Length: 249
Image 1: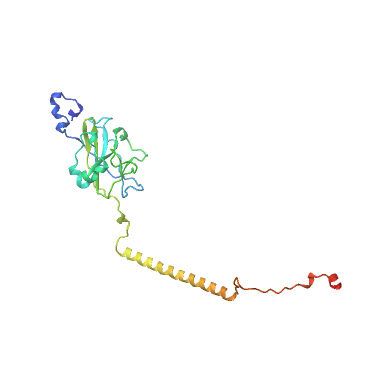
Image 2: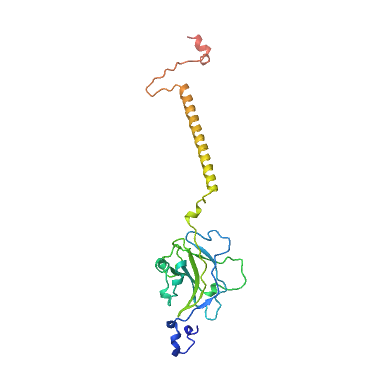
């Protein structure tokens, strides 16, 4: 509304944010990235398309902050837009409030125009270095969800506009990596069992060959201990003595 921009007389101040002017509703639904990306969904992150060209409304200025609201799907009805930047919920508030704000930007970062070859996405939960108690921290998501997100525009006077909520997004879970039950799982078990038997037979054959080789070698070669004396007969071949020496003896 015009009141929050200071465009009405002071006598009508009841229309300011104390009177809760309705937010401008932007007809846009945040979407998961359609690009083929490694890690589009992980156990702690999700990837969104950038909301390009969605904030060109006259009530939105280049200086207004555009926040991404991340919420548990069952907490969207309880969401209340903060009236001051100082009241912005942080990731550490998610367990209690059910939502928080992150990835602050402005509309200059989301320009319209034809699509370019450059990939423009938002990776939610991608910053492991910031504290979850820091305003705007893009901390990893703490659980599988499901989550819903929307964009909220705030000026220095309070909220200005918001998009629609996205659909539910469920992150990957460790259990999803396990084989599904059924005939395919039974076949996998049979293959693993056969390979295990073959490996055991191979190891047994190698062990038997090693024992046989050692026994054959040790049984045919006498080995003297350190306390035994070994007599060696000295033998000189005839060509070691010259004929002259033999004649003079």
